[in-house]
Length: 512
Image (cartoon, rainbow, N blue to C red):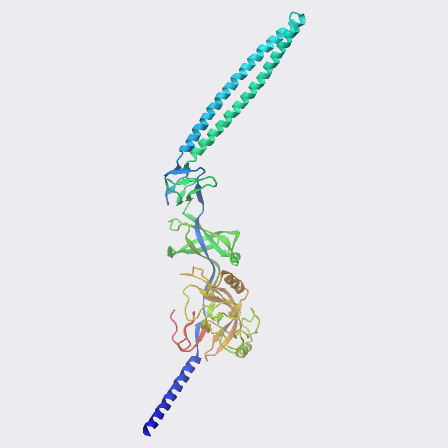
């Protein structure tokens, strides 16, 4: 009996302990931890980022106008050449044979022309003799000394001699024309032979060699490219692909900074020289070539390198800065609670771009009153995919938009250089988000009060560096330097940390 009583007591103790543990776990799960940062003051610089290719200012492709076998190469990769220097030769054997034949034809034509001129002189002599005979016979016929028939014969001989002169003159002209034709053929053959010697058209450096000795080149359809020569590698250009939404902010002579993978610690500088109007469309994304001129005195940069270009377009100095994560944050509250807080702060609800957030923001798509948690990596109700919470992205920052709801992932590489796509978004989606972000310059920030309660503050925002955004003015509520704003929240004691946050409220601040 006593053993049974002990067993029941033990079972009751175990049950009570299990209930206590479950209640504690449920309470811990339901607790909300906030991630906060403080409003500080500083400088903000907004830039246009693009990726481009480094090219020489002048690049010439050296080809061949004749077909044949490469017999000699005098230049190789990275060779410095001067204008007129022989850099290659094509075997001229067949072409030289054609030249000799053309010269022989020219000599034959000249001989024929000489014979034609001799025949012309002979015809002229015969014509003079016939004319003299006719002139002597004509008065004798009038005196009756010679018969009329003899006069007629003399007249016919004279006419025949005159006609012979015309024929001889035509033959002479034809012979002279043949001489000119054969001389032209010799010139063409000689030029063809000369084209077997490939010369450098400019001073520069050989950046590409496409043939080897013994290789046959065929120039029947188009001139094959033998070498590519860059004129001057101390002055080069970057062809940067800039989005159509950014070209309006870019002006000629603007300073430009860029980096390359070959020298990740170095930053190179140039200036915008041209924005070409020739548009390129890839997957409905329109880009324009922005040409950046820069000096390369040490010739560290080579043609073809990829450049990560940064063009500063606006700067705000000594202004209040709000974290972009605070512009995206929305509390996990019921719509009625959000509506009440908005009304208390005097914020008009339901006006996108004016009130920043509406009462419906905070609801899920099925209107159950539960909003997707920010640490689930889901998109916001009004579009604009969000980065996954719980892991700080190593490339890029989330660019907040008006209303704190939509956003744009503006990729940056090491040192803020490389454009990257966000969460698998297409370039078209990023372009649309970037266009919308410029129209929505009013947002709602949730301020953490001393009693740990949240208070909405409506603000007007300015330029952004994709980490922080300029606070232009406070429209509703109060927000000063040093105030604490919420950048994220999560449930449970083991929740992941949000990007850009300073740690959960009451916990140790995250290291910077």
